[in-house]
Length: 358
Ligand SMILES: Nc1ncnc2c1ncn2[C@@H]1O[C@H](COP(=O)(O)OP(=O)(O)OP(=O)(O)O)[C@@H](O)[C@H]1O
View (spheres, rainbow, N blue to C red):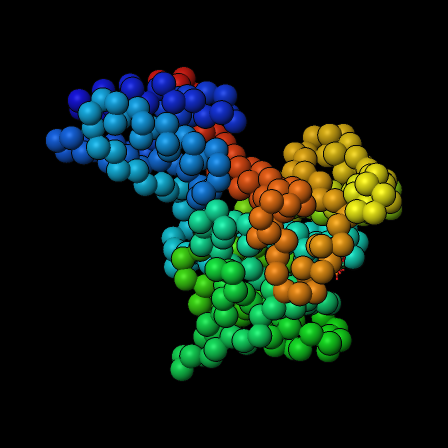
Protein backbone atom coordinates (compact mmCIF):
# COMPACT_ATOMS: atom_id res chain seq x y z
CA UNK A 1 0.00 0.00 0.00
CA UNK A 2 1.42 3.43 -0.88
CA UNK A 3 0.83 6.85 0.75
CA UNK A 4 -2.17 7.69 -1.47
CA UNK A 5 -3.85 4.39 -0.71
CA UNK A 6 -3.33 4.90 3.03
CA UNK A 7 -4.86 8.39 2.73
CA UNK A 8 -7.90 6.90 0.98
CA UNK A 9 -8.30 4.29 3.74
CA UNK A 10 -8.15 7.06 6.40
CA UNK A 11 -11.29 8.62 4.91
CA UNK A 12 -13.17 5.91 6.80
CA UNK A 13 -12.18 7.52 10.13
CA UNK A 14 -14.69 10.10 11.37
CA UNK A 15 -13.98 12.95 13.76
CA UNK A 16 -16.93 12.35 16.12
CA UNK A 17 -17.06 15.97 17.21
CA UNK A 18 -16.54 17.84 13.94
CA UNK A 19 -18.82 15.52 11.98
CA UNK A 20 -16.59 14.78 8.99
CA UNK A 21 -13.78 12.39 8.13
CA UNK A 22 -10.25 13.21 9.26
CA UNK A 23 -8.90 13.55 5.70
CA UNK A 24 -11.56 16.05 4.58
CA UNK A 25 -10.97 18.01 7.77
CA UNK A 26 -7.25 18.26 6.97
CA UNK A 27 -6.18 16.40 10.11
CA UNK A 28 -3.63 14.18 8.35
CA UNK A 29 -0.37 16.14 8.22
CA UNK A 30 1.91 13.54 6.70
CA UNK A 31 2.08 9.88 5.70
CA UNK A 32 5.22 7.88 4.98
CA UNK A 33 5.19 4.20 4.03
CA UNK A 34 8.34 2.13 4.45
CA UNK A 35 7.64 -1.55 3.80
CA UNK A 36 5.02 -2.53 6.33
CA UNK A 37 5.64 0.44 8.58
CA UNK A 38 3.29 3.39 8.10
CA UNK A 39 4.24 6.60 9.88
CA UNK A 40 1.43 9.12 10.17
CA UNK A 41 1.52 12.59 11.68
CA UNK A 42 -1.92 13.82 12.72
CA UNK A 43 -3.16 17.30 13.61
CA UNK A 44 -4.33 16.34 17.09
CA UNK A 45 -3.71 18.80 19.92
CA UNK A 46 -5.15 17.41 23.15
CA UNK A 47 -3.01 14.48 24.34
CA UNK A 48 -4.89 11.78 26.29
CA UNK A 49 -8.29 13.31 25.56
CA UNK A 50 -10.76 10.44 25.13
CA UNK A 51 -11.88 11.57 21.67
CA UNK A 52 -8.37 11.92 20.23
CA UNK A 53 -7.27 8.66 21.84
CA UNK A 54 -10.27 6.94 20.19
CA UNK A 55 -9.47 8.45 16.79
CA UNK A 56 -5.85 7.30 17.07
CA UNK A 57 -7.02 3.84 18.21
CA UNK A 58 -9.34 3.54 15.23
CA UNK A 59 -6.54 4.45 12.82
CA UNK A 60 -4.22 1.90 14.40
CA UNK A 61 -6.84 -0.84 14.19
CA UNK A 62 -7.66 -0.06 10.59
CA UNK A 63 -4.00 -0.25 9.51
CA UNK A 64 -3.27 -3.38 11.55
CA UNK A 65 -6.22 -5.06 9.77
CA UNK A 66 -4.42 -4.25 6.51
CA UNK A 67 -1.33 -6.05 7.81
CA UNK A 68 0.55 -2.78 8.39
CA UNK A 69 2.47 -1.47 11.41
CA UNK A 70 1.26 2.02 12.29
CA UNK A 71 3.46 4.60 14.02
CA UNK A 72 1.45 7.68 14.95
CA UNK A 73 2.55 11.11 16.06
CA UNK A 74 0.66 14.36 16.57
CA UNK A 75 1.51 17.98 15.91
CA UNK A 76 -0.36 21.23 15.58
CA UNK A 77 1.07 24.08 13.49
CA UNK A 78 3.02 26.72 15.44
CA UNK A 79 0.91 29.12 17.43
CA UNK A 80 0.13 32.34 15.55
CA UNK A 81 2.82 31.48 13.01
CA UNK A 82 5.53 32.37 15.58
CA UNK A 83 8.81 30.47 15.77
CA UNK A 84 9.56 28.67 19.04
CA UNK A 85 12.05 31.43 20.03
CA UNK A 86 9.31 34.02 19.67
CA UNK A 87 6.67 32.09 21.58
CA UNK A 88 5.88 32.31 25.28
CA UNK A 89 6.00 28.77 26.74
CA UNK A 90 6.87 27.08 23.41
CA UNK A 91 7.10 23.64 25.06
CA UNK A 92 3.62 23.81 26.54
CA UNK A 93 0.96 22.42 24.20
CA UNK A 94 -2.10 23.78 26.01
CA UNK A 95 -2.63 26.51 28.57
CA UNK A 96 -6.00 26.17 30.29
CA UNK A 97 -7.15 29.07 32.45
CA UNK A 98 -9.62 28.36 35.24
CA UNK A 99 -11.64 31.45 36.11
CA UNK A 100 -14.62 32.57 38.16
CA UNK A 101 -16.52 35.83 38.29
CA UNK A 102 -16.58 35.78 42.08
CA UNK A 103 -14.50 34.31 44.92
CA UNK A 104 -15.21 31.18 46.91
CA UNK A 105 -17.07 29.26 44.20
CA UNK A 106 -14.46 26.48 44.03
CA UNK A 107 -12.19 27.72 41.25
CA UNK A 108 -8.98 26.44 42.90
CA UNK A 109 -10.69 23.15 43.71
CA UNK A 110 -11.55 22.71 40.03
CA UNK A 111 -8.04 23.76 38.90
CA UNK A 112 -6.33 21.29 41.25
CA UNK A 113 -8.64 18.40 40.35
CA UNK A 114 -8.39 19.17 36.64
CA UNK A 115 -4.58 19.11 36.81
CA UNK A 116 -4.50 15.88 38.86
CA UNK A 117 -7.18 14.33 36.62
CA UNK A 118 -5.26 15.12 33.43
CA UNK A 119 -2.12 13.68 34.98
CA UNK A 120 -4.08 10.55 35.94
CA UNK A 121 -5.09 10.17 32.28
CA UNK A 122 -1.38 10.02 31.45
CA UNK A 123 -0.67 13.61 30.37
CA UNK A 124 2.33 15.75 31.36
CA UNK A 125 0.80 18.50 33.47
CA UNK A 126 1.77 21.72 35.23
CA UNK A 127 -0.38 23.75 37.61
CA UNK A 128 0.27 27.44 37.92
CA UNK A 129 -1.46 29.08 40.87
CA UNK A 130 -1.75 32.66 39.61
CA UNK A 131 -4.31 33.59 42.26
CA UNK A 132 -2.31 36.52 43.60
CA UNK A 133 -5.02 37.40 46.14
CA UNK A 134 -5.30 33.98 47.79
CA UNK A 135 -2.82 31.44 46.48
CA UNK A 136 -4.01 28.24 48.13
CA UNK A 137 -3.03 25.55 45.64
CA UNK A 138 0.06 24.39 47.62
CA UNK A 139 -2.21 23.59 50.60
CA UNK A 140 -4.71 21.78 48.39
CA UNK A 141 -2.04 19.39 47.12
CA UNK A 142 -0.01 19.39 50.34
CA UNK A 143 3.09 20.70 48.58
CA UNK A 144 5.68 21.05 51.31
CA UNK A 145 8.70 21.65 49.12
CA UNK A 146 9.36 25.08 47.61
CA UNK A 147 10.79 25.37 44.08
CA UNK A 148 14.57 24.99 43.75
CA UNK A 149 16.61 27.80 42.25
CA UNK A 150 19.28 26.79 39.73
CA UNK A 151 22.63 28.51 39.11
CA UNK A 152 21.29 30.33 36.09
CA UNK A 153 18.42 31.72 38.14
CA UNK A 154 15.62 29.56 36.88
CA UNK A 155 13.19 27.75 39.16
CA UNK A 156 12.60 24.00 39.21
CA UNK A 157 8.96 23.44 40.21
CA UNK A 158 8.21 20.84 42.87
CA UNK A 159 5.99 17.95 41.78
CA UNK A 160 2.95 16.45 43.50
CA UNK A 161 0.64 13.72 42.13
CA UNK A 162 2.67 13.90 38.90
CA UNK A 163 1.86 17.61 38.51
CA UNK A 164 4.56 20.31 38.38
CA UNK A 165 3.57 23.20 40.64
CA UNK A 166 4.25 26.89 40.78
CA UNK A 167 2.44 29.29 43.07
CA UNK A 168 2.60 32.87 44.19
CA UNK A 169 2.46 31.36 47.70
CA UNK A 170 6.00 29.99 47.21
CA UNK A 171 7.22 33.55 46.72
CA UNK A 172 5.05 35.64 49.03
CA UNK A 173 3.84 33.15 51.67
CA UNK A 174 0.18 32.12 51.74
CA UNK A 175 -0.87 34.68 54.32
CA UNK A 176 0.88 37.81 53.10
CA UNK A 177 -1.56 40.32 51.65
CA UNK A 178 -0.23 41.72 48.39
CA UNK A 179 -1.45 44.72 46.46
CA UNK A 180 -1.05 44.10 42.77
CA UNK A 181 -0.98 46.63 39.99
CA UNK A 182 -1.02 45.89 36.27
CA UNK A 183 2.71 46.30 35.45
CA UNK A 184 3.73 44.29 38.54
CA UNK A 185 1.35 41.51 37.64
CA UNK A 186 2.70 41.42 34.11
CA UNK A 187 6.30 41.23 35.35
CA UNK A 188 5.68 38.56 37.96
CA UNK A 189 3.56 36.41 35.65
CA UNK A 190 6.17 36.67 32.90
CA UNK A 191 8.86 35.58 35.35
CA UNK A 192 6.79 32.79 36.79
CA UNK A 193 5.96 31.38 33.41
CA UNK A 194 9.24 31.98 31.56
CA UNK A 195 11.83 31.44 34.30
CA UNK A 196 10.29 28.21 35.52
CA UNK A 197 11.60 24.96 34.12
CA UNK A 198 8.27 23.48 33.15
CA UNK A 199 9.86 21.16 30.58
CA UNK A 200 7.54 19.71 27.93
CA UNK A 201 3.94 19.85 29.07
CA UNK A 202 0.72 18.68 27.46
CA UNK A 203 -1.34 20.95 29.71
CA UNK A 204 -0.57 23.89 31.97
CA UNK A 205 -3.60 24.59 34.16
CA UNK A 206 -3.68 28.17 35.43
CA UNK A 207 -5.72 29.10 38.51
CA UNK A 208 -6.61 32.75 37.85
CA UNK A 209 -7.59 35.15 40.65
CA UNK A 210 -11.38 35.49 41.07
CA UNK A 211 -13.05 38.37 39.28
CA UNK A 212 -12.85 40.03 35.93
CA UNK A 213 -10.63 43.04 36.50
CA UNK A 214 -7.39 44.31 35.02
CA UNK A 215 -5.26 41.72 36.82
CA UNK A 216 -7.06 38.87 35.13
CA UNK A 217 -6.93 40.58 31.75
CA UNK A 218 -3.19 41.23 32.13
CA UNK A 219 -2.67 37.56 32.90
CA UNK A 220 -4.63 36.49 29.85
CA UNK A 221 -2.56 38.85 27.74
CA UNK A 222 0.71 37.54 29.17
CA UNK A 223 0.01 33.85 28.56
CA UNK A 224 -0.86 31.96 25.37
CA UNK A 225 -4.19 30.68 26.69
CA UNK A 226 -5.74 27.86 24.64
CA UNK A 227 -9.09 28.11 26.39
CA UNK A 228 -10.81 28.98 29.65
CA UNK A 229 -12.97 27.04 32.07
CA UNK A 230 -15.50 29.14 34.01
CA UNK A 231 -16.56 27.92 37.44
CA UNK A 232 -19.84 29.05 38.96
CA UNK A 233 -22.33 27.96 41.61
CA UNK A 234 -26.00 27.55 40.67
CA UNK A 235 -26.92 30.79 42.48
CA UNK A 236 -28.13 33.79 40.49
CA UNK A 237 -25.50 36.09 41.93
CA UNK A 238 -22.65 33.78 40.96
CA UNK A 239 -24.15 33.37 37.50
CA UNK A 240 -24.27 37.15 37.04
CA UNK A 241 -20.57 37.18 37.81
CA UNK A 242 -19.98 34.32 35.38
CA UNK A 243 -21.60 36.50 32.71
CA UNK A 244 -18.94 39.15 33.39
CA UNK A 245 -16.34 36.41 32.99
CA UNK A 246 -17.70 35.58 29.56
CA UNK A 247 -17.48 39.24 28.59
CA UNK A 248 -13.85 39.39 29.72
CA UNK A 249 -12.93 36.35 27.62
CA UNK A 250 -14.84 37.70 24.63
CA UNK A 251 -12.94 40.99 24.96
CA UNK A 252 -9.68 39.08 24.90
CA UNK A 253 -10.89 36.67 22.18
CA UNK A 254 -10.20 33.70 24.44
CA UNK A 255 -12.13 30.53 23.69
CA UNK A 256 -14.32 29.35 26.57
CA UNK A 257 -13.99 25.56 26.85
CA UNK A 258 -17.09 25.43 29.01
CA UNK A 259 -18.87 26.07 32.29
CA UNK A 260 -18.56 23.99 35.48
CA UNK A 261 -21.33 24.15 38.05
CA UNK A 262 -19.89 23.60 41.51
CA UNK A 263 -21.67 23.01 44.81
CA UNK A 264 -24.83 21.69 43.18
CA UNK A 265 -26.97 18.99 44.78
CA UNK A 266 -26.02 17.92 48.30
CA UNK A 267 -26.58 14.21 48.86
CA UNK A 268 -27.23 14.07 52.60
CA UNK A 269 -25.40 11.06 54.07
CA UNK A 270 -27.76 11.02 57.10
CA UNK A 271 -31.24 11.27 55.56
CA UNK A 272 -30.35 9.90 52.11
CA UNK A 273 -32.19 12.74 50.28
CA UNK A 274 -30.80 15.27 47.83
CA UNK A 275 -30.88 18.95 48.78
CA UNK A 276 -30.27 21.81 46.33
CA UNK A 277 -28.73 24.21 48.81
CA UNK A 278 -27.54 26.78 46.26
CA UNK A 279 -30.17 25.75 43.70
CA UNK A 280 -29.42 23.35 40.88
CA UNK A 281 -29.18 23.32 37.11
CA UNK A 282 -28.38 27.06 36.88
CA UNK A 283 -24.94 26.39 35.43
CA UNK A 284 -26.29 24.21 32.63
CA UNK A 285 -29.07 26.69 31.77
CA UNK A 286 -26.51 29.49 31.77
CA UNK A 287 -24.24 27.50 29.43
CA UNK A 288 -27.15 26.68 27.10
CA UNK A 289 -28.43 30.23 26.92
CA UNK A 290 -24.93 31.51 26.05
CA UNK A 291 -24.28 28.65 23.62
CA UNK A 292 -21.33 27.52 25.69
CA UNK A 293 -20.44 23.88 26.38
CA UNK A 294 -21.52 22.62 29.80
CA UNK A 295 -18.70 20.60 31.33
CA UNK A 296 -20.59 19.08 34.26
CA UNK A 297 -21.60 19.70 37.85
CA UNK A 298 -19.81 18.87 41.08
CA UNK A 299 -21.98 18.01 44.09
CA UNK A 300 -21.64 19.89 47.35
CA UNK A 301 -19.75 17.18 49.17
CA UNK A 302 -17.90 17.46 52.50
CA UNK A 303 -15.23 15.12 51.10
CA UNK A 304 -14.20 17.84 48.63
CA UNK A 305 -13.47 20.27 51.45
CA UNK A 306 -11.76 17.61 53.57
CA UNK A 307 -9.62 16.52 50.61
CA UNK A 308 -8.83 20.17 49.85
CA UNK A 309 -7.68 20.75 53.43
CA UNK A 310 -5.93 17.38 53.57
CA UNK A 311 -4.00 18.00 50.37
CA UNK A 312 -5.37 15.19 48.20
CA UNK A 313 -7.40 15.99 45.08
CA UNK A 314 -10.80 14.23 45.22
CA UNK A 315 -10.49 13.17 41.56
CA UNK A 316 -7.91 10.61 42.70
CA UNK A 317 -10.44 8.78 44.94
CA UNK A 318 -11.71 5.41 43.65
CA UNK A 319 -15.38 4.52 43.37
CA UNK A 320 -16.82 7.82 44.46
CA UNK A 321 -19.61 9.76 42.74
CA UNK A 322 -17.94 13.14 43.21
CA UNK A 323 -14.64 11.77 41.90
CA UNK A 324 -16.55 10.38 38.89
CA UNK A 325 -18.06 13.84 38.28
CA UNK A 326 -14.58 15.39 38.42
CA UNK A 327 -13.18 12.75 36.04
CA UNK A 328 -15.97 13.41 33.59
CA UNK A 329 -15.30 17.19 33.75
CA UNK A 330 -11.58 16.52 33.16
CA UNK A 331 -12.37 14.43 30.07
CA UNK A 332 -14.77 17.07 28.74
CA UNK A 333 -12.14 19.80 29.18
CA UNK A 334 -9.56 17.69 27.32
CA UNK A 335 -12.04 16.86 24.54
CA UNK A 336 -13.04 20.50 24.11
CA UNK A 337 -9.38 21.53 24.02
CA UNK A 338 -8.93 19.09 21.15
CA UNK A 339 -11.90 20.58 19.31
CA UNK A 340 -10.32 24.06 19.51
CA UNK A 341 -7.17 22.80 17.76
CA UNK A 342 -8.82 20.55 15.19
CA UNK A 343 -11.41 23.17 14.27
CA UNK A 344 -8.58 25.72 13.91
CA UNK A 345 -6.69 23.40 11.55
CA UNK A 346 -9.73 22.56 9.42
CA UNK A 347 -10.83 26.20 9.20
CA UNK A 348 -7.31 27.31 8.16
CA UNK A 349 -7.40 24.67 5.42
CA UNK A 350 -10.86 25.80 4.29
CA UNK A 351 -9.56 29.34 3.99
CA UNK A 352 -6.63 28.17 1.85
CA UNK A 353 -8.70 26.10 -0.58
CA UNK A 354 -12.02 27.70 -1.46
CA UNK A 355 -12.86 24.70 -3.63
CA UNK A 356 -11.91 21.78 -1.39
CA UNK A 357 -10.08 19.06 -3.25
CA UNK A 358 -9.49 16.67 -0.39
N1 LIG B 1 -18.11 20.85 45.72
C1 LIG B 1 -17.68 21.20 46.92
N2 LIG B 1 -18.16 20.62 48.04
C2 LIG B 1 -17.71 20.98 49.28
N3 LIG B 1 -16.77 21.93 49.48
C3 LIG B 1 -16.25 22.55 48.41
C4 LIG B 1 -16.67 22.22 47.07
N4 LIG B 1 -15.96 23.00 46.20
C5 LIG B 1 -15.15 23.77 46.96
N5 LIG B 1 -15.32 23.51 48.28
C6 LIG B 1 -14.63 24.15 49.42
O1 LIG B 1 -14.97 25.53 49.40
C7 LIG B 1 -13.86 26.34 49.76
C8 LIG B 1 -13.56 27.33 48.64
O2 LIG B 1 -13.10 26.61 47.50
P1 LIG B 1 -11.91 27.16 46.59
O3 LIG B 1 -10.76 27.64 47.40
O4 LIG B 1 -11.66 26.14 45.55
O5 LIG B 1 -12.67 28.39 45.94
P2 LIG B 1 -12.09 29.57 45.03
O6 LIG B 1 -13.21 29.95 44.12
O7 LIG B 1 -10.81 29.18 44.42
O8 LIG B 1 -11.86 30.67 46.11
P3 LIG B 1 -10.93 31.98 46.04
O9 LIG B 1 -11.89 33.09 46.05
O10 LIG B 1 -10.12 31.89 47.30
O11 LIG B 1 -10.08 31.92 44.81
C9 LIG B 1 -12.73 25.37 50.04
O12 LIG B 1 -12.68 25.11 51.42
C10 LIG B 1 -13.12 24.12 49.28
O13 LIG B 1 -12.59 22.92 49.84
